[in-house]
Image (cartoon, rainbow, N blue to C red):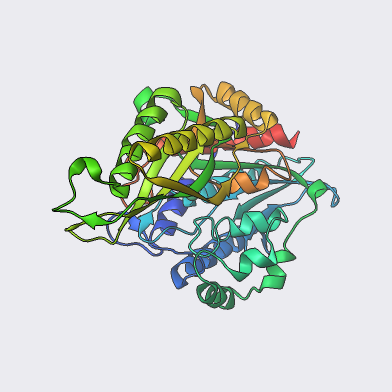
Length: 409
Ligand SMILES: [Zn+2]
């Protein structure tokens, strides 16, 4: 069993075929969730499964799967997979590599004639990227989708309804896609890193220790509008200046004291927004991420303390509008150990990494042991430039296969 390896050529052929669907001609793909291109990718997956003589399964959330059943029908299921949807004009590796690798691992187990005590399922989750809802398929399987969440999705209710109509699913069927916790033996995901750490370090596999949590807060600085020509510099209550000071000081503080965290100011609005008026109001959209809930609280407290200290310096009032977020999600020790042992078997170097981006693993981690690995990638992500060398993808798929064999036993 230690000698078992995936079929590299078959894996590559499938990956390349899939990358043609919704291809943007520059190395990228455009497959927003439940769009015509995304549904065509799903049709490809279904046909591939059926041509290979494997069992195809879909559920009320539109998730598509290949299933390799165990002898005992009541056995739990070990899930592996990721997502075939992309962001608008995204890259061809994000998500798709994880689905094709999971499927290749399943096919390798079937071809080897191994009898495992669990069902193995390679799954493509609906709408991971959040064109419509975000983690829709994986949250549905985890029983964490609510009617309220579906009523006001981030991509707009009308867009969601049109997508559901194209896919033949409904609010009710999505909610009914929840699986019994005891039916799940675990979830394993392979993904490109989407960052430079593995390539820079020359490391084969990143074993994710946790997926960082994320919080969004709007800060509103309220000063006083004034004539920009007649008001002396020292007499101003400049909300824009207070916001700008906060951006630079908060960034410096995070770099200095929170090296494991990140902060971003992606939205700034000054009012009234005229050349000749001192801004009386500045709205700042702030998002920050941390590897644990404890660290998240420390970071939030520190950032808000800083904002409240900077306001009075400019005679500006600071109002805080919390927008919520996602909790940090640790990966299961049993999955991390399975991946580490798999790397040992295969002679692959590995390191523990935090995931700065959200993934389907976050949803599954609440209902079963869930873990994920990264393969080295360049060109960032959510872009046609994202790239992973093929031998690195093969290493990842073999690590996924061997981790699954360990989890199955
Ligand atoms: Zn992804």
